[in-house]
Length: 400
Ligand code: PMP
Image (cartoon, rainbow, N blue to C red):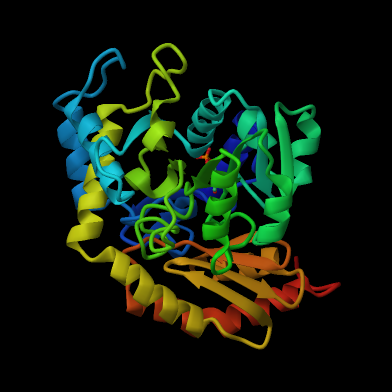
């Protein structure tokens, strides 16, 4: 029995089966590569699902975490810490509002950031929310109420709140759904889980006009699309739109669990002492990790790298079986002309590449922002063979 088989059996015996059997047992990572328990190397084009911004075991991240942990590892949120305050200030800078232009609440995940935002919207005195079809905002009960996918929702109904879902990208449908009772409109500027669906030109600006006209909050869930993933600090950067709420997580600390709910302007004042809380949110080690990620992205020009390498990769993945490619920075979605994405992802693993089948006919790539052109070219060279093997396995009667 190999070590991977051994771990897979023990996993099945001791972990809840919420993700299905593990596809690999991973033991080590360096840069954009990971190794499995049997010593095989893979190019990681999923990056912990848009989390490992600096790749694996980046020296700057390791140093920041080690240093903070050996200085002050955790205190209660009754106390302030230097990294926590510095990170809040940096995030407000990245949102282009600056300290004083908004307020941050730290969490440990994207779902929790969205739960905080959801509670914050209740402080408007309104309860009605508008979200988009295809949305993903998390699996905790409040975040799930904003997530559109029936398969995720149905086993847990009734879900809290009053949520209206509108087709993503259709400003007229949004205008029709928002009323003076709407507390907030929540949108992903790029829908990641749905397969990298990019907001059409002008949509976010129309959403701003519509919400302002009705006194509703505009909330961008940038958990997946934020923190440099799209080659800009935020996917909405450059849209000219200032939202009232932004939620972040995933890439924020490059793999150390941290999330943030940011209220801009008056929205930053809606949660008052006693309204909300968390034990771990804003932990100094997590905050120091996030500061190191932001610093390294700046120092090493990783926003530009994401734009250049992302464009090169997307271009190289063109193929007769690929009917659409959507790319912003290093967030890439591909549509296939058959429902063989799981088989294609399996064929990729067999060839040493980790990619994600986010729907039966859809592939998503969210590699580390440190991915090099040469590494992108490795995937491009292997791509026709991966597709061929995946399609062969996906044919009726083919190997599964
Ligand atoms: N919002 C978005 C846009 C996401 O992509 C995700 C995770 N895929 C979440 C929220 C939930 O984040 P987490 O898994 O950290 O709770």
